[in-house]
Image 1 (tube, helix red, strand yellow):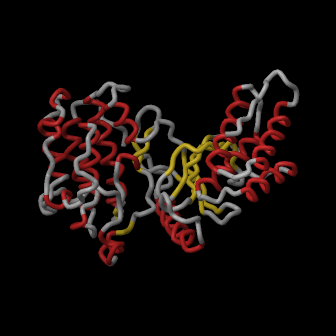
Image 2 (image 1 turned 90 degrees about the vertical axis):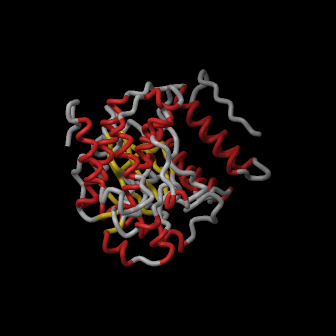
Image 3 (image 1 turned 120 degrees about the vertical axis):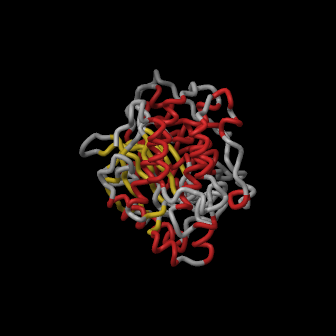
Amino acid sequence: MITINLLPTQPSLYQQAMVQLTGLVRGVTRFQADTVMEQVEGLRDRLLAAGVQTPGISRLFARFYDLYSDQELTPDSAQTLLRQMKTGLPSLIEGYDELEPIGFGGFSRVYRGLETETGRLVAIKVAARNQEGSPTLNSATLERLTRAFDNEWAILSRFRDSERIVNAHAYGKTDRGKPYIVMEYLDGGTLSQFIVDTNEGRRKFDLDQTLSMGLEASQSLAVLHEEAYIHNDVKAGNFLLSRDVRVKLADCSMATTVKEAAEAKGFRRDYRGTPGFIAVQTTETPKKDVLALGATLYSLLTGKRAFNPKNPVATMLFTPPAPSKIRPERKIPPRFDKIVLRALSADPVKRYPDAMAVAEELEKITRKKQRPRR
């Protein structure tokens, strides 16, 4: 493996680093994108550690990462980017700089960035390959992703000032034709990571906080249900947290209206969502989201999945054990057990009709405690 050695005591550190990077890209006999990206990232980190302000390297890294994530980082594309550095490489997203990748999903990559005009931090979701191991981002895939981004932008625009749905600021396309959405940046991570941190002991389990977060997650989904939308991909990873642990719902790319869901056919009707969270027998009503919400609350309480994602039939036929039986040391209230298990009911008739009903039940438990802001 070729390594890049930076000596902070030497003059013109930035120029020296660029020479070394150019040599890396041109000197690899068998071009390996993984190796190049590892070295580009290391180069950027070492410059930052040496106290060198590197807007050019920041832009270059974002460009390399964008190509790499779509399996399109080649010797020619890498050398083209390096040549553009000499004349001024444009930012991946016009008007936003210092892009840093912070997350990814099946259809997108998410960057933290700086809005150059206002200086505020934002999150930017950019279309990417639809799954690991898939071919490069061809025109057919890009067209499908563009429709999903169009759909999400339309929905987020409707809830632009919501305290429960992540706020969206702008929509556009990169110079490669990839759609992106600029959103508010929430620095508390995801509810999924919060659950992992709690389950692995990096956070102490707090029942009052858990009740409050479960209520806020339910109220967030209720905002969509009140407007006759079905989210279609409710899970802990799609709830974002602020630093003070406020909960907001995100990723509305699969959302539909109740009417659209009832009219959908085939695969689009039955299986959109994440395995282990899909109630395929109620796809045309908010009850589909209610089961997924119940599975999210179950994980929040226990740190474990309600259903095995490799056995989707379980979400149709079986109700899991009560959370209090899984984690008796957490002293989960019987009323909370009852709410979660009703949301997870294998019988759609017994399940809550929508997230508003779940939130109302959870609010009864927390009524004597400090109630979250609406």
